Length: 400
Ligand code: HEM
Image 1 (cartoon, protein in one colour):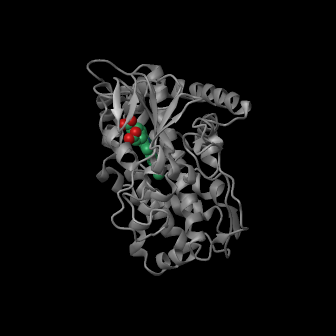
Image 2: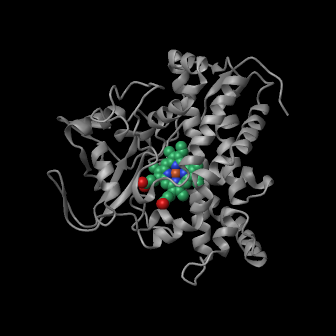
Image 3: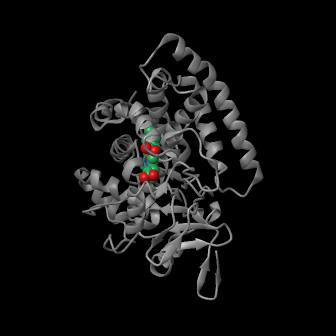
């Protein structure tokens, strides 16, 4: 980020912008240029809550079908489509993600949380990202998809490597991403074939493979990308709220103490962690017809990034928006987006966050940071969060 006269010049495609501290720049945008133009990349950024909201709800003017990632071709998955294709695609899997079916998973989530904590509790220290935060969402989504236990670590590596290519300046990241996609495809081919042969529909892969839409079935390519979206949606996001939420609690000891003193605060605390961390930095929309937003003229084909973390610190909506307040109420954050593409996994993410923090507060009550940081973040223009968070605690016995 450099300053030319009074105007900030920001490379919106650079992962390093998001991994640094983008909040002052977003504040500047909200005040001065809420529909910000990155002239170099010819891409727009939407910084204010009201605009992110309005654009998300107007799907006929601001489309997903040209790609939810900027400057990239659309892939055959629901997030890269508009109605009616989107509606049909989303309906296929949404039954598995209703509030009721997710609530029924609470016991399983609790068990997985305890298994994850068992993996570290006797050691007295761990890397909270690697050993805790990355594992719970991965295990949950791999189980829902129907991935066998021995392939979980591969899933984590593949999704990590694919995500690293989003705005990382290192050319090796792009190469790693292609290799990961290749390996993922090779793993999925026989799995898809098996679900097709057996007609199994007891997991999300089976449901997608055997679903009929208007008499048609999804192609192998469709299946590959749709499952990948669910994998990445599931395991690359929640982990950052676990780690970023833990960091926020540690950096605000009064808030941590309040939560410890009264666990009934947890649901609101989770919402505040979601607002505070907002791991998805943006989604892309493509303008379908010439349109004005305020006094900014946009032309058909223009691409706009919806900045969820910026919207979630908008002072016009959130009082003391830059204060981390676990009792915040109301808290209409849009970390999960809104409208037609509102996050399919929001209930699952909320359940995982609530139970993991409950179990951590109970089982590792004196967990604290090991060092003052800075704690590195992954340079990404898409999903951004901590790569590592060393913590220490008094060793305690396993429960299983
Ligand atoms: C804290 C965790 C999460 C955050 C912050 C998050 C955020 C988001 C956001 C911002 C969107 C785009 C919304 C829009 O364009 O309006 C989205 C879509 C989506 N998310 Fe999540 N997500 C999380 C967890 C999950 C989980 C656990 C899953 C598991 C299945 C998931 C699956 C999806 C899917 C499939 C979509 C595309 C929905 C569509 O296109 O209709 N997400 N998420």
